[in-house]
Image 1 (cartoon, rainbow, N blue to C red):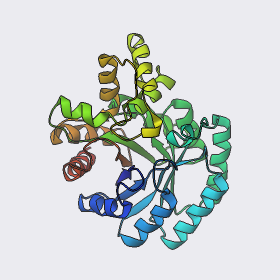
Image 2 (cartoon, rainbow, N blue to C red):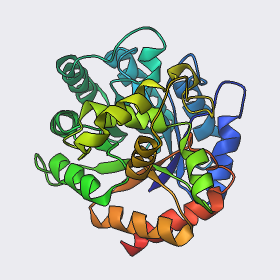
Image 3 (cartoon, one colour):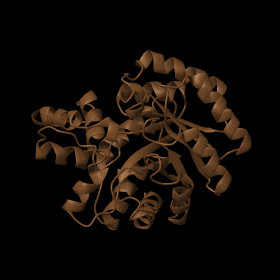
Length: 309
């Protein structure tokens, strides 16, 4: 299964129209970003998409448990599932731009685990429920407590394979999906422009778990500079890079570790490697520059890779 994560600011695009474009490109549906100051409400838009399109899957991704109580999240998902059985995708997480833009910090791992327990108790089994996770502690806790994981571990097949294996170390049949920043590009200039809206948030993941992501010691301060330059008020836009001196070498390292770029053949080969690592489904990041412009090519490349793998 392949869905497009719709992350467009309020008023910039209609999620129903974007869902139609995703389906026309051969994808299975859409996921809707959750950040109240940036995007339309993801739960309301899920209902609109599922009512207005034949999407096989649609739902919030990533629904912030840093802002929303798990009981209210479960109630919304139960309601959606009752109206659209078997078509609801729900991905929850500790929060990123959603909490940072409210002057808060993501919940502790202990608090997050407690929220996952509530969700697992209250959300019907028919709804596809995943927890977003990047680092090893969150991946392991999510697999054990929620029973479904969306790994956000970058684009290096070795690290992705390590993350999948960790998720399945608790239970071999746990569903493991992957959040992937990918776009078909013609050259390095295209690749740099495509990565710009998301590079800082990717760097933040590397900073939080540098050993897990195999960040060389010589690049760690530079990667931290990339993360610090990210403006979460403009997350997912071309203006997300704020002020500050960012080393070009660190920029390139973050891009290569977290964003799949290149021609259609290169993208296909990378997704074949992800499939071989045991990934069950893919959420494509819609905030990557150029994704919508070349969505047909990207959709074919991803589908070909997952089938090949």
